[in-house]
Image 1 (cartoon, one colour):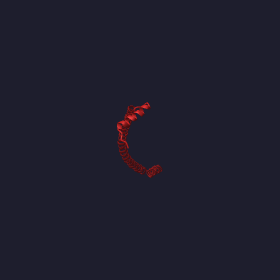
Image 2: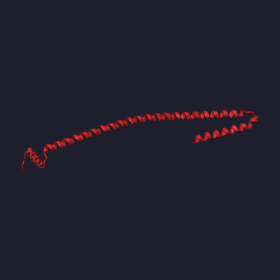
Image 3: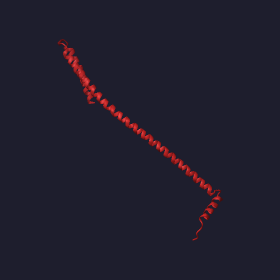
Image 4: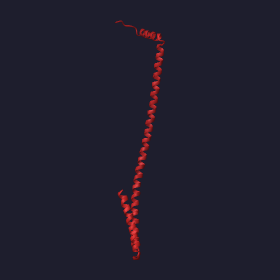
Length: 130
């Protein structure tokens, strides 16, 4: 087996490429341009990925704040519903007491007030069951 000088091999390659209207320098330049384009594409992708991650982190933080606010509002709503029930109960008791304060001549009116109160109590019960 014969050992040849590597530079001789390059000369042969260059001669072949030159015959095809192409030289080694042009090939090298093409490779460098492609390599540069790949680096540009990769850098652009990195930048876009960083932007996406940053946007995700901002949205995740905002989402946490919104969930905290929702929990707070839910608790306040529970408290207001309970207060509303208590106030409705007081109103019903006062109306019932007022109905019994009526004189005996107002018995018919008292019965009507009691019927109204019972209907309201039934409404409250049905709301509680929902």
